Length: 294
Length: 285
Image (cartoon, rainbow over all chains, first blue to last red; front, top):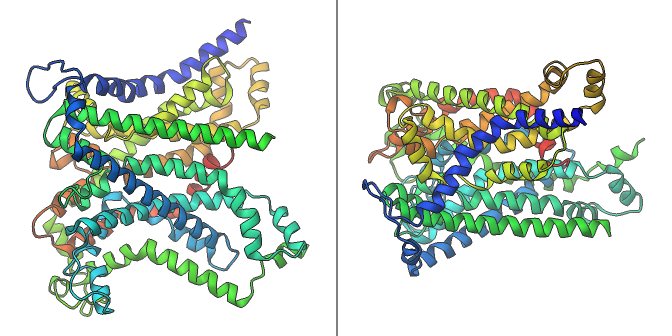
């Protein structure tokens, strides 16, 4: 009995440092955000309680547009990441000479400082002299220079593509690991029965990948919803707010305009959306798990 | 015996298709690096000329020399990046190694919920918590110091480090702990003398992924909590340079390549561990 108790105490002692750290640096700020969102905190010395005023203020047409845009942006980014990632993993999973090298070459966007990768994209999107516009002109696909980041529609897609580029290595390597965890004898059994490569992919690989795909989509969804660096460096939310997502909007309000209270209200909404995603994820995974036991 | 070999035998058109697929995939991944490198070789005159030319015709490494003058703090930025990431890694390890061991070995009331709470930290980015963090850093008096970037950086790297290391430690046979315990070793002694040496490969993987995470993601805290040039990490130092009206692109690209070189070399040497760490933490539950 006392051994049991001393074990539990030991476990808590081991956990305490990390727990304290996360409480002070994450949990406390989280609570503080909720509190701040009901105040008019700013650079002023005094802070007043304003109730729901911040929330009433942000629920207008512009903000609804920002929310809508965030969802569309996230949806396309995550979907494209998953498609390219599964495609890449399938290719890298093939037993062909050179695959070890190809796997290493997949990593750079993930391991290089994000900002530096984004600078490179910034140049590629340059209308006058950048690679994409230049190549398209050289091939005669467009007539004049296309300044991708200066027009709303193209800037929106340009930021998505860059976000996809940064996210793809992780998705690819994760899906590759998931593919390699599929028991080899399944393939051999199917092969003995005369199943072709495509058939094996469709009937063995894809179905068995679904749990990993859901997990990865979820992780990717959270990261993408929180994506800040890419849009901030490329467009700062412009032109005309066409790439302003909720995170960018929050940053502008809170840090740019120093309206801490209003910024906090926006941050709270982001937290609510993220919590909904997580709940949905746990519902889906627990349903999948119970399906497996049946 | 020959079955696994036979199953992997490709017909020629399958091989062509696979290599084409890999080429397209890697072209997307590597295009910005190729273009960035070629830009760093082009003289500014060629860079700002139409029509667009892919190859640098009279390319040179001149930008790699001149950038040291144009970006005066460059060496300092690289040092700062390494310094911040190293300190972050050390703090994360100190906090995470005991915590991961506790989660891997001991079942107590609330341990599951606590682990979930740690993982939930991953849900929130620094951007969401920026305002209170800013006020917190201000009241701690660490704004515009290294700590303004280190302290929040650590918190957001803890969850995945705990998850990775816990997975690794769960694979260490429990009998080892029990044997040590029967021999009269204390819990602490067991952790230090039995578990830590065995867990070293796992700890190495966590150290590497944490270092990379910290190195690659230095942006928002450094952008918001520090305005002193001498403490800026590489991405922010270059961002300040990038934000100017007239960007000297070939120098910016040269600086980027020199700046990422040490990290890339380190990472390619360690890539075996990296993939191992990722797959261990991710797939096997």
